[in-house]
Structure formats: structure tokens, C-alpha cells
Image (cartoon, rainbow, N blue to C red):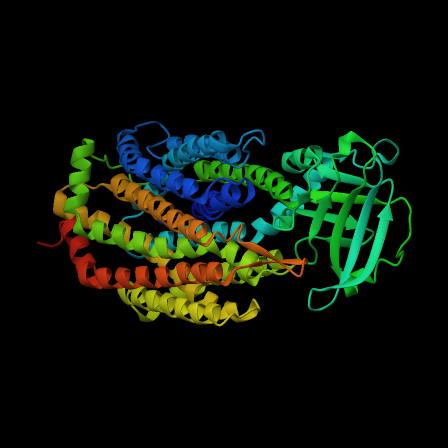
Length: 596
């Protein structure tokens, strides 16, 4: 009996929720802990890789557990639901690191939560994909279900990729405004005057000598957990945030001063709390914005809002993760209620040693596993570094908007490639030929991206060209690798006499996470060597700029390494993969007893 529309919809919604969770973790966990919370990039890279090594033992065990499970609800749905609920809770905790933690405590928190996230994701992911062979007997129906699931997974990934940065900023701003303290820096009568000195700069970032003063009754509103700023103010030392002013912004009237148009420096004589001193905030502002402040030289009462953008992002990621976790649970509940396992044949179980032996003996499964690792490492390296590329290379005051624009385009292309491009190509080419086309397309896109990055292209729009070739290939490959893995289940049954769906698909889960860990380690090494988050230099006492050497390391890492990985992947696949359509028909006929 063919799958109903209700079952396909229910199964697809589960893929949407599960890949929303996966993409949030895979693309933003390094950025969250390294760029926002200040954990060492190398420490994070090691954590992410160690977690994946741990999965090398956890994933096959979970495959055995699923294979042995027998309940009135089937083998898969109980673990699918349990894994989803626990993974959703861990996801929220992972992006909710307590602000009181620092140093080794924060590293330990990141390690524990991320490892637990991997364990619970495996608990859910293996039974989800193991349902494909249980739903179908093979052939076109299996291909169609695989394409549907991968398309829906691509939708989930695209949603998170597109909206995360803007959603985090919006949510974080709303929450941090409600959790702000008014710091008593104004104290004009008790501790002297607070002066805001805004200096006009010209196009060459040189001060023109024009100054705008705001004195007395200055109130700076700081988010509650901005300990770094509070301690610096209390210390009474010369305070300069010219190298970190992307963390903060200060608003006067309708003017916002931040890293894109100003260098903010705090100065005090001997300490605010000693009394009788004058505290000065100096800010350099370009002529256009400077002219908007028309009360030049006036003395009066004004309120400045001082906000940490890192606190905005910290709050934003916390509550955005909560929203994603809730949607994840809801979607998987719909999956569990809307589907039933149609293949009730008992799955033979074995020891862990026997399972690994079966995998090693299935040369086609191992070929696909290694190919998946190479392809995913290539794409994940780029996705991990892309946010740094937009923030520190293309930069600009609208880097979040440009990043979102690029991801919207790329996510749309990925979805269209699964929904339209793959089905169209399938009418004219075999899956093996489509694989070759996709990998060549990806390599071509990376070459164009490398040339444009090295040429210093500053507009986001030209980057949509390589983005098209890369993301179209990613979408098609996402469908293909699932089809190829499902095919190796039949091959393994014929060769080894056992149908190891859970084992094969547990390897898919493992290799995807392994690739994520390897890519994160590579990205963290790149960030550590380039020191891109901290490699800033004051230009004309007005702006921050990243050194050319740092940018070069970033550009080469996110392009050359993926090109190399893709080339190795296509060479391996073409030499080792033999399950073409003719071979698959022979295997199916033999298994049904219609062949020799």
C-alpha cells in the first residue's frame, strides 16, 4: 500500500523540526561560545570534535537498541519521541550558559551540554531515518520518500539559516531592554560631572576640531549582566573600548554610536567613586551624523542608552533556542501520531563487534559514509566561517542584513534544488550522474567564491552567483546520499544475510556529526590563527578594521579546503560506488526470489 498524503506530511514535519535544531547547533554553537561568551576558539574546536568521537561509540549502540526494541508502538516511534523531548531540553540549556560562569567553568558547561546534545540527537535521528526502509520496499517510492524527507529537512535548515541572526537581534533587544539596570554614572552632585564629548571627523577619519558637549545628569543604561563594563567603570582606570566597541553602542537623540561609525573611549582621573572628578566619554562621529546633533556646545540634561550588543546576542540566542526547541517537539509529536511502520519484519540483532564487522563488510555503505564525511566537512567549514566573513570581512553597519539576504537566497536555492532541480535532473540522468553534476557544480562555485574573496569584492550581491552553484549542489546531494544509503541496506542484506537498517543509518548520523566536529575544529583553528575576532586596529580613532593577513586566512580556509574535500569525494565515489540502476534491479530481484 502506498503512503498517504497524511503520512508524508507527518513524516516531513518531523524532518523540518529536527533539522532546525541541527542547523542551529551546527552553524551557531561555535559563534555563540567563541564570539559572544569569549571561550577560546581552540577549546571549542576540541570540545566539538571530542563530542563526535564519543558518538563513534554511542551511535552504533543506539542502532542496536533500536533494532532490539519491540513495543506496541513499533521500534522507532518511542525512541523518536524520547530523543526529541530530551534533545529539545538540552538545546535550550546549551544556548543558556549562566552569565556567572567564566574560564574553565564555561568550557566545562559547553562540553557537557554539547555532548549530551549529541547523545540525545542520536536517540532521535537514528529511528527517524531508519523508518525509510521500513516504510517502503524500494524503488521509486523509497526515492520519493527520501527526497521528501530531505526536502523538508532542507526547509528546516533554511529557516534557521535565514532568520537566526535577525531573530536573535530582535529577541535579544526586546529581552535585554526589559532586563537593564540604570547605572549611576550621572551622580553630578556627588561624584563630579559626566561629560559626553562628541568629535566630528572627516572622510579620512581625521578629527576636524568641532566638538559637541553634553554635561551633567548623564544616565547610561547597561544590560544587567554586563559585568565587564561595570567592573571597568568601578575600577576608575583609564577605560578604552576602541578595540571592543562592537560590543557596545550608545544612543543620543536619534544617533546611534557603535563600531561602524565611532570609537568610544571612557576616561576618568582617579576613580569615579573617589568623588570630585570628571568622567568623560569621547566619541568620534562622521560629519553626516554629527550634523544631526544640532545642540552644539550646549549644556543640559540628556539620557544616553548604553547597550552591550553581546548581551543582546546572548539573550537572543537563549530565547530563540527555546522557540526552536518547542517547535521541534510539536512537529515530532505530529510525526509520531501520523505514521505507522509498515514493514514489520524482525530485524536481526547482533553484538557491537558484529555490527562493526557487518559495516566493514558492506563496502558500498563505507564508500557512501566516507563520501558524506568529505562533502559535509567541506560545506560545514564554509557555514561555520560564513558569519565571520560577513561580520569582519564584508562588515558594514548592515552586516546582519547582508548575511540574512545571502542566507535567504542560499536557503531558497537549496530547497528549490531538492523540490525542482533534482526531480527534473532525475528525468534525464541516473542518480550517479546527478551526483557527479552536483559535485562539479559545488567545486565551480567555490572557485568563483575564492576569486571574488581574494579580489576584495565588497558587495553582497555578486556572492549570490557562487552561492547558487554551491547551495544547489548541497540540496541535490542531501537527497542523493540518503538514497544511496538506503540502497546499501539491500546490498548488505544480499551480501551479509542481514538487513541492518538501523546500523547503516546510525552511521549516517555519526558521519554527519563527525563532519560537523571536524569542520568546527578546522574553523576554530582558522579563528585562532587569524585572531580575527580580536585583530582590530583603530583607524583615525574612529573605526575598527581587521588586518589583511587575518582576512586572507579566513578567505582561504573557507574556500580552498572545501574544494580539496570535494575533489577527493568525487574521485572516491567514482572509483568505488557500483550500485547503479542495473545492479539495484538485480539485487531486488534476487532478494524477492525472482532472480538467481
